[in-house]
Image (cartoon, rainbow, N blue to C red; front, side):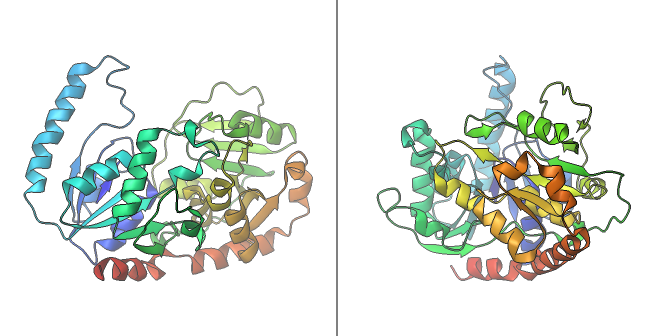
Length: 362
């Protein structure tokens, strides 16, 4: 297994898949909630490198960068000597997927594009051409493609984009049994929590800072858990927790609030397929924490999940500017019951055999 940027989904998958396979894990970044020891404690072999996000050239750390490259070449030669039945790559970047698929060409190839790069922009000229080419290679050469969006998501890819694809399985990030928590002690007021990355990509019609500020000016308290700096917040209702909590403590920590925020307003340059297929890791973190989820209606797949289980509130852009009143009208006990139903049905332990069997049948 190869993961360029380890996240909670990687840990969940490895935790369960180790019951079916002997796993060697290659990590390409050390910017993660999980260390080599965390994975090694699960009884798997781990090789960890420090590439992604280090900016060796930009920060003029050339010697450190070269040392990491030489370490990578030396250990990859050692790893390559082993015979592997499968090479499983979670991307992006897809360039890593293409590299490792070619490196372990004799192994059966399992491809997990956490997001489909082709769906990012309407104007494909805006996309990195190397990433587009690498993604096409991975789709075309994978023996099994794992996708986390709607069941028909891959059928949205046009023939002139990617002409052929092999086996497919729809597999969501799901809830991790060990992280399910029940926190009956809530803070006073109405507190919304956001966890995860914070970026200022141009694809957003309303950026993160504006989202938080608008909610706070509407009389809601906003709790932000992120390792990324977003600048000083003028509104005293916006509380930033830069000290990093690790799983499962993070899940317990955010469980004391009232709602999880999963609100993203995109501009017109974004391919509609992106909005219709988006499914965040944080969606399941909020369920694990026992929190109803606030999602906006343009994120149709997540909105459909919220409606199916009645585990949160689907808002329009108009509702966004009157959110406190919208939330006051909710039957919170019913929403909590919906959260309980959703996380019980969406446990990874109930789904993992489907994935293991699909891999084993290659």
